[in-house]
Every structure is written in C-alpha cells, then in structure tokens.
Image 1 (cartoon, one colour):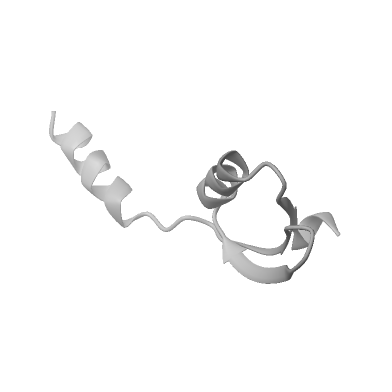
Image 2 (spheres, rainbow, N blue to C red):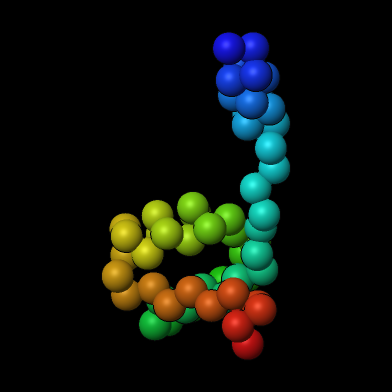
Length: 57
C-alpha cells in the first residue's frame, strides 16, 4: 500500500522528455521543444500540421 502511494507521488515529480521540433502549418514554421503528449494533442487538434522531431531529420 505504501509502495503504491510512493510511486504515485514520485510520478508527479517525474520530468517528461522534451524533443526539439519543427512545426509547419503550410505558411509558417515554428521551432519548439515539445513532449510526446503535446505533439499528439497538437496533431489531434489540427490535422494540417506537420511536426518533425529533430532526431528524425
């Protein structure tokens, strides 16, 4: 029981990995550092966005 509580609290302080990304919407390019969750949510909101991680270049 204490182990579950400890892991839950530890999960709040865990830092997500950020990736350098290029975002292209057809007109403008943006350079951002995003997490995987942010990339997924942006793609869901706007299907026209092209998001490329720096690692993929």
